[in-house]
Image (cartoon, rainbow, N blue to C red; front, side, top):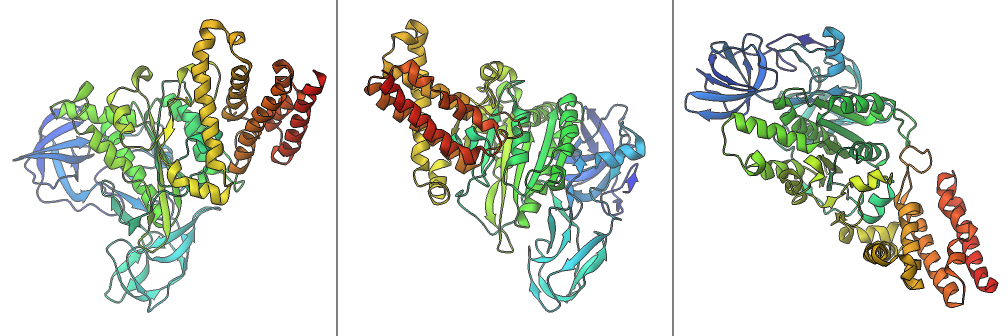
Length: 595
């Protein structure tokens, strides 16, 4: 891995423009330069140390630059040098298992060369340019190719095959292509017009990668988390927001989604999180096992770490870096799950930069363009037909950290206007040790109408109706609880007391799920349906028993009901639940005979 202390753009030696300028004014991460005429979003080198920055405004002779590194000690009069390039990421074999900062500098490689403190002005390639990969050509000489077509494959990790694609905007007839051992900068294919194609591509992070068309969200992203899959499902290519206060379980929920969702690739962006939280994630993720393959989860994961004490400009860029990497794997035909934790810190970075630019502030000091930036980010999600004709998807799950848990603040509200799934974390549920602490009364998903046919075809024909019944029981319980708080549950009619018991069974047996238990951590959709059906069977049989003269206490306390609820922690539960249900129905029927 090549590391250069300054003046190097990833992957190629920097061609310095003759048109160099000087620093005119400095305000934190925002630097004003004169004497250069750059393009918008062009990368420049600032100061004697060559700090990386990006042009974000042009005012006559003055160019306003946001610098991705700490600017203390930089003085007016120091040089500013154009590079002629926009902020881009390197895409190719070697992305997986990596931990990057917000501008795709590989943190472990930097740590090896300079210790835990990264010096300013340092740059390193996002990919290892020297590593040799085994390239297996699938195209052949004489083939006519166009943007997005697969030229060959590389076994990047034990579980993921990297598909080497024709870069967007390139087409022609193959003159020569060879299998063999190459690094990412060597030519693996030459076209008849003389164009050379390498395994590495570069792509500007603020530009969405092209595709043929977007598909309707008709396939669910299966997560194994009962409250998410059953009540508030997310479609592949969909968008979800997880607002919640400190300690309510956002990070654990996102780790569960990364570990168990049926996505092929995971991109995790730690955007402005506290250092201790990010350390915990970086420590845990490399040791998580992928339940599908038995290999390390990092074999199909790319992580971007940008803690709250790192420069705000790099934090602002980190989400674009992450979603560009996600789109690249989508173009190969993979399903990608992108976790952004948290978009609130991203918005705070925008607010700080906006104030330095002296822009007119919007609500709570955020820039007036906050909602449009959030929309630009979430709109890059989707299930698409790729340029090569395959299907791929990027599902975006953004955590939001509203101050004090108040979701009426601008970032939460801007997110809710865009995303179609809202998983509302509740501090009250977390204090009761109910996890996942997702409030079933104010959470929602707009995807079920699109997904219901998939459930009917692949799970059970009455799956949507069972979900509706479960949701209705939780709503009725919330209404009855208001009465219970006034007069007590004993004053309610027996049928309403039964409803409260059934709802408690839904909460404790179905919605609660232990992320750290080997068995309960994951439940497939068919078992979720069977569990929900068992709850409704209990309600139906209990009504019959009560009508036949049984006492509510006897019905509720049948031993088989307890066995059914506790059995979910035992391996092989899916094979035992039907037998447990039969026993419970039999015992409920016996309560009529006892009375």
